[in-house]
Length: 346
Image (cartoon, rainbow, N blue to C red; front, top):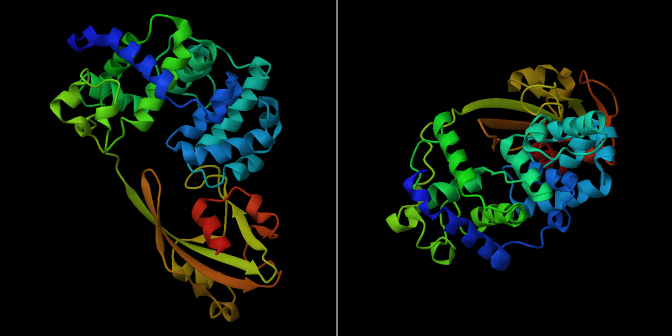
């Protein structure tokens, strides 16, 4: 065991005491240990802040109160409710996972981390969260917030972009778990709470942290230097020209994107690789009626999208190739990328 882990018992005790007094206890998914509700919240919370998730979570449960309801829904409807939350592969995997739980497990989520990981879209940390929060299993989570807490407290300065070192951090996460299964739900929630509230990325509140005096990074005065991840994501850029065609009564012409690639399976206006390609797709008499809104950049995880939006008001004729008109009542319910929804609402 690393020397720093001599304080591992103190770590769990401090965290449990802090969570009881200062942790979050009023989040909507905490009202139940129903694996369906916990799983739904965990997927939504991946790379998304709590304040954003809460409204989506409530709407999802109103429409899909059980895993059976979600499994029998269409992917279009799921993507429509997810629209604006981003990282749409989560919604596609959410739908696939619900179907797998119904078809393979009779609608009952398995209790073990290993079995949960066999389901679509459930990685080791999400599986551990469901297993510990719902079933009290001694399983360690290791999402971004938890990595930050553990690397700082134990002075873990190895490069987490290397798989071997991330595995070593998993081992630390497992070693500092509380001894009793009954403590696991509060402990796991405490890990999430500490990373999300006090142990923030750029301005950690060390003076209010339960690990004050135990935390190596705090003693060094170098909290923001952890965690270490030297390999940076390679970013790319792509330019898109969108033809936002509308009718006078507010209908929008939309096409469904391919199942793979940027905005997979979502609905968008026709997209072109250049301004010229967009214009020549139209009859000559319409080309002069196009107006342009200012170009802007939409940032994805690995790519910057440079978006150029052309606007055109038409009758109800079909002149734009594949796609169809969606009424002003219907298009807002479709799965639309956030910038597309903003363009159509403008």
